[in-house]
Length: 269
Image (cartoon, rainbow, N blue to C red; front, side):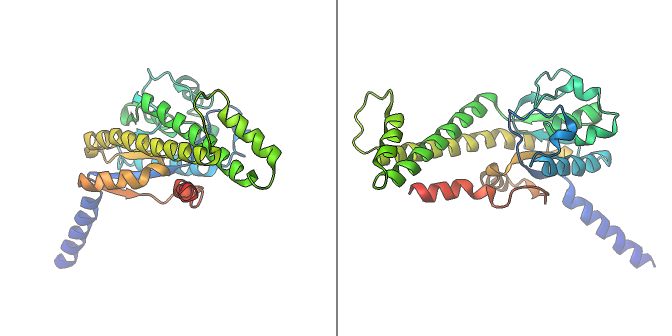
């Protein structure tokens, strides 16, 4: 009997030790900035609903058990507390506070860490692992990538099939340019590749901020809520720093969406 109890104790200790100083990473499907979710019932129809609610429920359980004592957020800068004034999808600290004791609070779609902070307050450290300047630059690179990839695709499609449409896209692409462009198809391809490289660069630099926030709070078994595009570089950096992590299984995340930029790169090469 003593041997059995000792074995069970050792197994329990070993199981617990694997969880100490471990970061949990949750892949989130971002809500769009234009999504206003103040109409809670209507917002349930959004495709991100299942993923966002799953992450909230999962962390809610872990935080209530004090397994996770810190949450690190993408998309903002600084600590999230009662003085945090930013609004996401129509929701901020103040109006979330007015809903936190209602049954529908669980269904509110907004920045998940903000929602968790409103619920747990001093029992949870909620911080932003991001940088606002880099977020803006990353967003601009993403917009340029979408635009130039679109031009490249259409110009390539219409070059030998529809002269009128080809000219429309060419004129739009070159509008306002002072430099001479002899090959609009190749020009748009190179500009798209340039934008893709910029996008990747800013993702990697933002990840440096996440890694710093994780290491500074690793004793709290932090959870990170982040877009899947960050994962390949983030996992490598955490591995290089010998930080234990686990990528959590989540529901409602679009299959293969993490590989979209790999697919774009193939098209542009």
